[in-house]
Amino acid sequence: MELSTDGLVLGLRRRRGRRYRCECGDSTRARYDLSRRRWRHLDFGSTKVWMEADIARITCPACGIRTETVPWARPGARHTRDFQDVIGWLAQRMDKTSVARLLRCSWEAVDRAVRMLVADHLPTDRLDGLYRIGVDEISYKRGHHYLTIVCDHDTGRVVWVAKDRTRKAFEDFFTALGPDRSEQLAAITMDGSPIYMPVAADNAPQATVCLDPFHVIKWANEALDKARQANPAVPPTPATPAKRSGPATVAQVNAPAKAWRRLKTALRSGAENLTDERRALINALRRHNYQLFRAWTLKEQLRDLYRIPPEQARRYLRRWITRAIRSKIPAMQQLATRLTKYFHQTVAAVELGLSNSRAEGINSKIRVIQRRGYGHPGPDSLTAMIYLCLGGITLNLPTQT
Ligand SMILES: [Zn+2]
Image 1 (cartoon, rainbow, N blue to C red):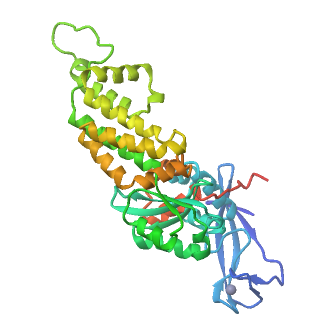
Image 2 (cartoon, rainbow, N blue to C red):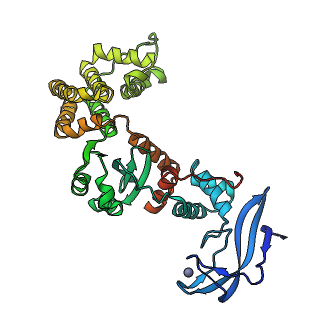
């Protein structure tokens, strides 16, 4: 043990006659050469700690010339297992930049540790017993690139991540799944994408394709947004302050913009979550902007599709489509056309009990990962983070026993 300028260095010596282990599990006595290497270990207080040892390059009968593996570090790592486990545990809970700062290591070290941990810990049986799955795309780099994500509705885990949103990306999933496990699939949820639908039909023809409720509600909110832009009359704010004489104050000038923002939030929130103030805003809409009020009502009624008894879904949706077409609100009429096209897939989601699917949860969790990971430079880093946080990986801290 020695205290150097870098911190505390723990020198490790090899027991005489010990065999060298290869990554493949084989071991040998024959070594090629020796070199000294350091691994960063967990800090001792505020002092950095390093492990140092002579490490051999060996001639493995199976692999050829390799660097021997050591029990305290993963192959190729410059940090000990314990150090990397702490990185992973923290990265499941906070952004990488903070992890790097807290542990006094580089961003790249965090990134590398995350990938190694995923390779080590991702459940190998995650494609077993899949019954109801969802496939979706997520965009990154400001919507210029995509990943295809497959999740298990019954565990809420991400089981597959592939680059791009192509037929091939989804086909690769079925190749990994194999014909036997593909046959066990009962339902596949997705958005109305023409990319994934034919792949599902080819590889799991017995599975019912369902329209993801998450996307239906998203479309409804988008239609409502369009209706709001087309009907820009702002209802008077419920509690209008008394008019003052004299030049307009900043607050008065900004009032319309503020009222708009408030209205937008009120329209977005579900009827059951409205505060008194927002409810008053919606009620005012009924008197002053009936078109927009109607659009809001249609959105809420569509949300109810996922709360009614499943056997009523078919009739309920048909009546909703009729109402939307009669509303003369173009955005809602377009949504009605879209839902007519995917009528069976929409109803199937309700009938198969996927109304409050966990896909929505996964979608928003991925957005959180993306938001705090400003600096997933490529798809591989983002993929590793998605698996680390949503792939069912449980990491224990070295201090937990
Ligand atoms: Zn080997």
